[in-house]
Image 1 (cartoon, one colour):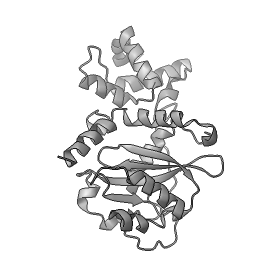
Image 2 (cartoon, one colour):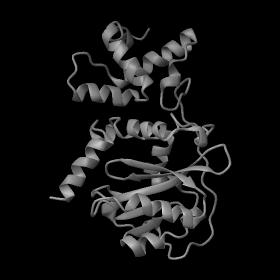
Image 3 (cartoon, rainbow, N blue to C red):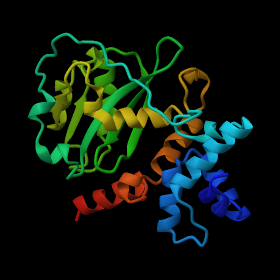
Image 4 (cartoon, one colour):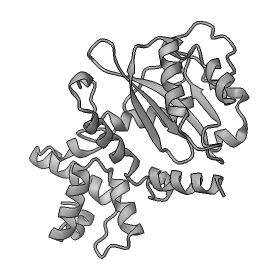
Length: 262
């Protein structure tokens, strides 16, 4: 066993706590970072957690790696396919015209949105994420028409506090073709990524990837209770993130929203 793993994992209480959080969907970085923030008596580095899991999986053919975000058997990278090219979208504004303050995540209220599809035909979730806090919203999407998507985004927008929704960034899917209805109703700005460039809206891509851990593509949304979907979203929004100093998206969004209203 690696030295770092041997010296950390011989504490049963620490091991149980790490395994518990892994089972809840936390990544090793989230676990280690939150322990530091909470000043827990037992601490461990994320690197030690990764090394221990890969060592057990490789040496003893255990399945601990299935608790990891990407469920990979060993370290490495995976290639990703780009999105298909799109036709022209009326009143489309390129992401290259998006202000620097949005790109830098320097203010609250700038969002990204996308559809999360499932294996059953016609089943989608509309997911939106606030760029600064990584706080996410999700709703069942009945139909992929541009009007249906604009209507659902309107439903998500209406209860939001003032200035908590300033802009939206999309890919070039035709389901976002009626984005201008949101601009006319709420006065928000909309921007579109370049074709085949999903990394330009990396926040929502990451969000959907994380939600996939509990909502794999084979999930039958029609058989999923509303309470279960709420629980998945709550877990996402209440899991600490390294990019937020190991605060949760809920904590950061709440802080920023309160600041907007004072």
